[in-house]
Length: 316
Image 1 (cartoon, rainbow, N blue to C red):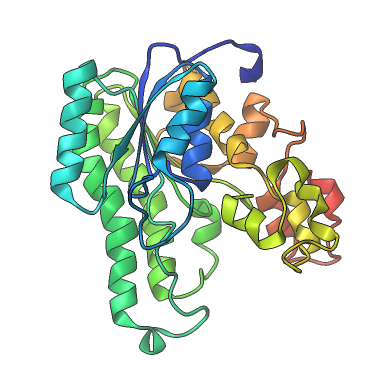
Image 2: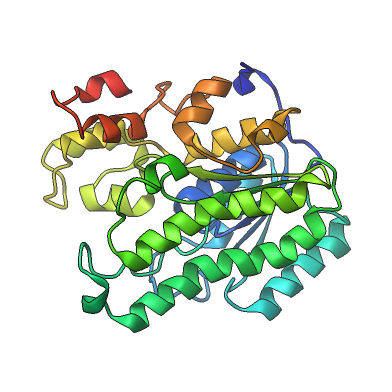
């Protein structure tokens, strides 16, 4: 096991693209890559001049500023990853400025509606369903079409698809509805497909899932910030009180640190075509969250299916 936290700037000199770096998991990964020395291209639709229809305050410029202000190097670029011309132009610009791409991370589609929870396909709005397919699955494929066209030329190139749940979990659990279930199963399969195609070029593809992510939206719901998230069980400004399970939540930077550890591993090809979680990678590489803990969200979630009910304290 390699403890990545003992290595200073392990990704210095590498060029990374984080597609969907505006907030949440994408922002956490972009920030960690920048902290580790990579030059990070941060893309998304929300800028200071134009919010997406999601209408959140976070922007790609904010993400880039987090990296640059910490002494790293980041570029913010507005891109709609469902628009092929914009994706093509983005990759062409990266090639012009750097001549290569070492790491590509796709964190796309989290803003899309999830459809009706636990309702059969005939009760779903097909327009919403098609929007999910386009905004999530198609955007991942479209981005990979162009990004891997550049990345595969770099021996040791790494592609990471961020998703929700690994293959072992998604293959045995129904995920919300037929559209969502199909998408989540497909995203883990992309790592298998991309990995098959990258292997002959010395590249690696992995699907990676966080646990219960303490995203900006989640913090807002409970009226707390990252530095006081444990206050979510008290009376908060929003009036919402977090469930006990929130104790196994993890910061976006925890996932980002796991991505850095994977990217810095000279033997990362052993992960090729696999799907995994932040929990698994953290144990493998000795990664801790901001508070020094190592949350095990997916182990806790699966333990809930058994009796007796697990103690959340044992999973952090």
